[in-house]
Image (cartoon, rainbow, N blue to C red; front, side, top):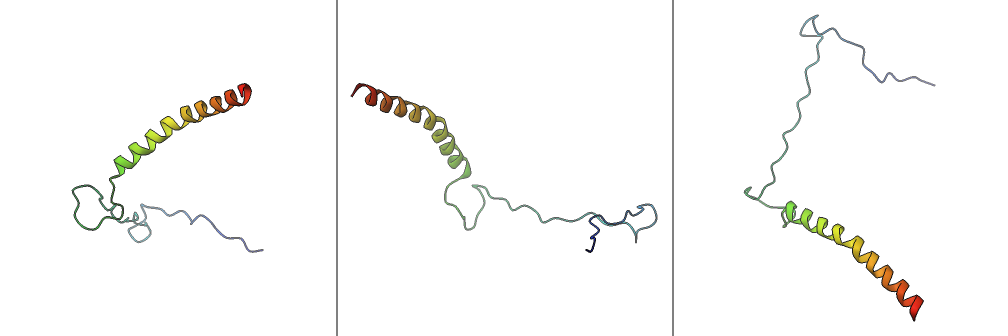
Length: 78
């Protein structure tokens, strides 16, 4: 079985510019806002979708509880 070294050997950052690794450069995050021009992937703003999901999750529990109590009451008294 062959062992794989998961960690690179430590390097002395004070030894010189050749031995020190540079910090990675990442791509910039694209800006998606209402004022941005160009094609949109989703036609609805994210804050409206999030408000709709919050509304549904806020009321789904009480509606399920009321429906369950009504079904139990109908089963018991019918």
